[in-house]
Image (cartoon, rainbow, N blue to C red):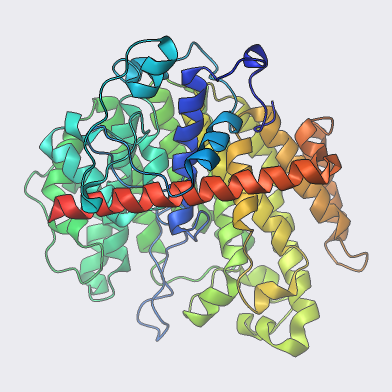
Length: 535
């Protein structure tokens, strides 16, 4: 169902069912938080080789930045409503219109709200409680029913962990806190553990003879209640300085979650140490590098999904598909961020590919080499597209709506980014980004597998139309696009959105703009509340 349509059973009624409206607003809040930090920031973190005079890069954590698979936000506080920046009429129009796909099972939103909140009570006919007096601006809190974790119900340690989550990853916090049940806490701790590991790898003030053993043994620190590291100079050093709190909450998790997090942490630490003094040469090493950076995160998350019993065991068992989910995102970031990485002294494009087009990777940015540079770019994009069939197969297995949203949104953002980068000289001159309105539409549309297939179809068709006949990789590009077409649904309404009337498109863009304005206000108010609470 199109994201702008009402559920079929509710058409003709004056109002939408409370659960549908609340779910729509929940997802929009996550969208706003995602935009607050940039939805598709690079997650490749491995440094340029230490000790070779190269400028430091970033450590590998597929969870940081855009972070493997999700978007941002601040922790929720006791239930009060934040004011809206848009006019009441505009917001009312927004709420009536932005009804996302209905839940796959019976509506659960009201139950989670301890009675449904003031809005749900009005819809059920119950008398509304008197409005609460306004709070000072610094104490504004998210609306009731926010997907963000209700911290008033958490223990002190978990509250601290969610505070660190919001401080260190505005781009990943919201979708974590939108996950269902105990999976939310497990993924939060998973993120913080990998962020701590990443911070050690990132810190260039730590010598290799100290850093390498720390990376190898970091997983064992999870079981040492007093272990912490106080010498880091990195901006996220609080996760190391207060690691006892994080490790305590890790040990409070169910053993099945502990085993997954410890195992992935161990493997990622070994991978970080391996690439400290190593560059990416062959395409095999490129895949291996991306596996350590993001593939392991995909595997770990998939095992957590299955351990929570929100997803079937096959989701966690099929590591090849989970790895492809991470590699597709990672390769997209590496391709898009060529110029930024060059300016920072980092090289992530595989030598085996770029050496066929230039003597040095930096030469691709020279104007006289632009044609060869674009051919190299197209070859790498073709390589990344080979992961799309695995992505679609993986997403088709997911049953839980919160897990599906968590996984699908970054994937559709990635395919849109590759379509924007393909055959685009601007990759070597600046930053190629998708438009905010386009990203809002993608986030609201990617709520079921048929919609995601239609989005993939749309963007691979866009790439297909741009394939130059003289491009050395043109045949391979056409072949991989044919395989993606075979898995997609060209008859989907979303695949033919360009046939919609100009009036419909204008309304859609207006609603997207209103939603962005509204969500920006919520995000800002929540951030002010968190800051005030810390003071």
